[in-house]
Amino acid sequence: MKLSQRLNTICKLIPPGSRLADIGSDHALLPTCAVQEGRVVSAIAGEVNRGPYDAAAKQVAAAGLQDKISVRLGDGLAAIQAGEADVITIAGMGGALIVRILTEGKSKLEGVSRLILQPNVGEDLVRRWLLQEGWLLRGETILEEDGKIYEVLTGDRSESAEEENAKLYADTTVGEPSVTLDREQLLDFGPFLVRAASPVFHEKWIGEIAKLERVAGSMGRSDTDDARGKKEALERHIERLKEVLACLPKDKPSFN
Image (cartoon, rainbow, N blue to C red; front, side, top):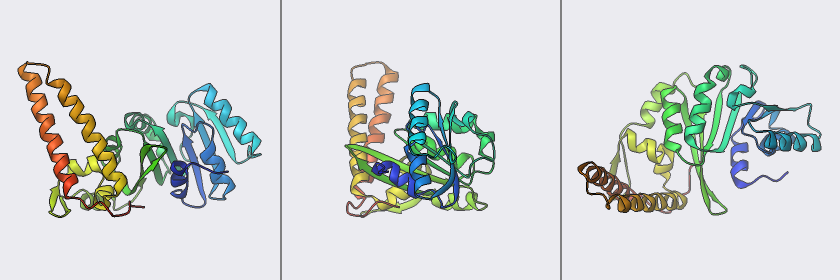
């Protein structure tokens, strides 16, 4: 089976010999490929909606992998039991929803050693959750496929997570001329991604700045003190983003 670049990137981050739970599995493409490649010994494909659940079950049956992949109907981590998986993947949904799934299903994370998370938006929310919950941000990958930009975040259980995260999110000087980023900015940009500053990273943030400028422009039509204050704060934020982006090299490869 040939996966998209996005799903293939996620698949390669699954440690060999793992037991996988893919939440929001859609057609169960990721667990099917991971089993066929021998990367995982078993997998759970979880879906909250009947249509994608039926599609996943059909895919698994067509591949003859019913003994290796369990397709389940459930909301988020309700589809699994604690201790059933070593690795959990959640991809293709908003960062706020990923955080809700992980928070509501926290008891199901017992025994899980790796989270591979691909939010479509709100990546900073996922980083904040990993940091607050004591997971080590092991790595980040940014990629472009079919005109869309994706970030894949890998969080690991680690006894030294607090110490390593403190170093990862400590004030960091990057670029030439140099610019210093604090923890909040590193959470926004991604500590690995901003240090690598790939062309795709630049493309993403040029787009984000353009969106924020449109918002600021629409705010300019209000004359209230509150609106003016919010617009000024947003404009300062935009200028800071531009300052950081202008200092970063544009020819480094993305982090893997």
